[in-house]
Image 1: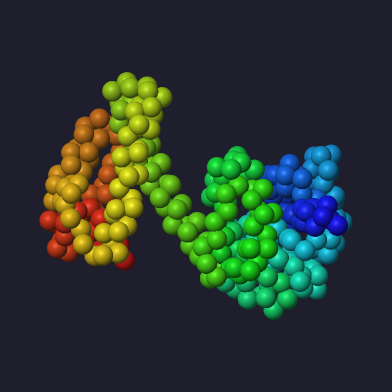
Image 2 (image 1 turned 120 degrees about the vertical axis):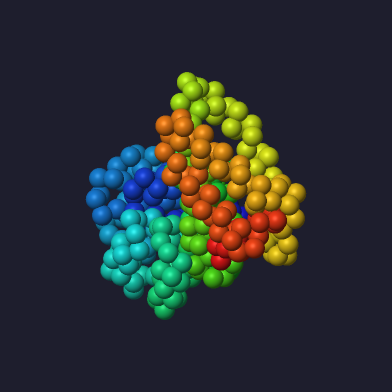
Length: 291
């Protein structure tokens, strides 16, 4: 009896694109009995060779297990796949790792609940390459009971964080963090172009930039606290001072023949903060002109 009780629960994975295939592979590596389905059946071949069971239809895959993970192109594809198998969803936990909007997640949660399923919306925050490693981050929101039921299973994908009962919150975090990621990367790309204009090797600059980032990351928690309190001490300088520094960035870039799209956007935001009375406040006051 103890062996049965400790056996990992079987899981079905619907959709075998790059993410879905990585999820199924991580489950198999963790010893989870895994059933897979994909609209193009040949996508399952490699997974079958390492132990996956292939279902002929989405409905059959759902019927085979109590935990169903879906990772397809978009919300329309989710509805297309699940709509044809809605009668099999009752009693299942549905984990949707398809990218979408918060509104779509909430709508799917309502629909899944009406079919008798518990719903979790999820976001793979570390892309595909890290799936199956402890340093891969996955965010989930929706039913707390459902998350508790599947936490041991989804931990095969990476670190799992539950953000609350609102099914749309994981998607909101996903979108917000995309902004953080792309802001960092576009700033880095601009920096590469700037130092590259002087013949600096991008790889050498990346080493220095990596060493600098802990300082910037160390500001996040304190600046978040400032925004909650609505107080913005000028410990890292005022917006007035920052404006002059960004002017220097714009001018230096232009003289080096580097497009100023990135610093122009920063300069415009800083100026808006100054115009709205935050010139003597710290940079976290910019949240006031973005809300």
